[in-house]
Image 1 (cartoon, rainbow, N blue to C red):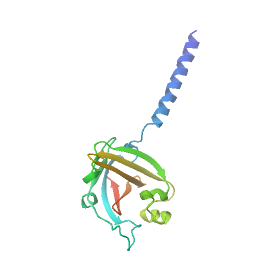
Image 2 (image 1 turned 30 degrees about the vertical axis):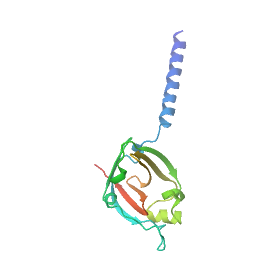
Image 3 (image 1 turned 60 degrees about the vertical axis):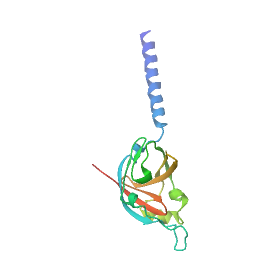
Length: 163
């Protein structure tokens, strides 16, 4: 009888461990996975999809261009409208064609010029409802310490702040 109880207990522990791993892997994406922490905006360039004859001219947001952005589990601290008390995140791996909502005119070439190494790119989509504003923005990781995002036909580059 003792061996049967021991076998049942061992089986239950194994099932519980596997169930815990499955639930852990299915949890909602959180910023701390790869983007968590503080980032400084270090460079801003006009987006490559804006041509000389384009009616949508680039607009530089000075507060964001000099800004510091901190991604936390459910909020963002940052300049201007990037400050969000109830942020939601989705993490995906995307090809260059998905960068900047498909805005690149020659995705592979332009992604490489921006510093991406090729292949799939880790992207975090952040959404936030703050007052009457519904904010959505994608952040794309070049490497573990460099990420970019687009706003008003400008591309902002961020570097991770290391303690």
